Image 1: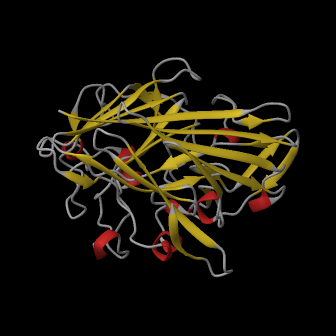
Image 2 (image 1 turned 120 degrees about the vertical axis):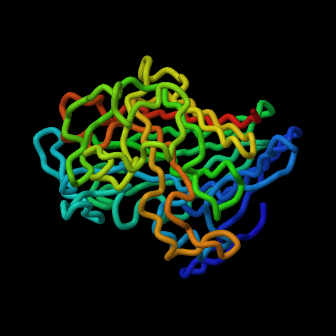
Length: 348
């Protein structure tokens, strides 16, 4: 553990490191319970950082893309920033407006990615704790949250979170790292091979909000049931892709919600690096970095270029509070919210 930088209010952020004997090296910071870097070997044994991010605390604090962060209280979008719970309507911040349609995105103006968490390390696990006050960003109930990162000797990075509340609220905590398995942030992820364990996805309107429909991927550019080059169909003449300027949609993960199961596999043919993703959540959002435009500089001063990183965000379905047919996202006193996400690193 080392000091990473000082916040404007004088508090210090810290940097933590996890390593195992097999090569992977992970760094994290208590600012936003953020994954700073993941170094893994390619097929020749050369280590490289396979995440898109920043060189300094100031960079992480100012980044507009939720790089590496833990986002919440509700990740992804909520239409108009409104939801009704037990007959009472709640208004959240509307901090995003794709297609000119306002929505609440990733917890609002000051979400969980923009706060300092309490951190403690035990062996190859680091726990981050945060207490979100009743009314913070418009959410009801005080929410007590713990996020734990663990690096195993099997080259798995586990992200596990749990939360409790003192009043009914909604919860959808999401991990938001950007991956580029080439290890070179100047390259795009368009040549990566993607496979998603999903037979259906959630169509959206022009505001990138789910319509409530669950559509089959078969016969569409959304079909990743077998390994597919990401760039092959990302700009296809298909309504869902036009609305999002590429892939930025939620797929319905096969299998039982609440059970850890495969969700995605990504491979970089050039480096041989492979990332497998497992989750216990109903959905996984695949985002291809369509809105990164090079205006923000990341590690080594390299601009965060369009499609230079991809996100695989396991989560509840977007806009779940306003979609009665979607899986439940309400947390009540006496209950515990749990979410497990596993990243497994290997070489093809």
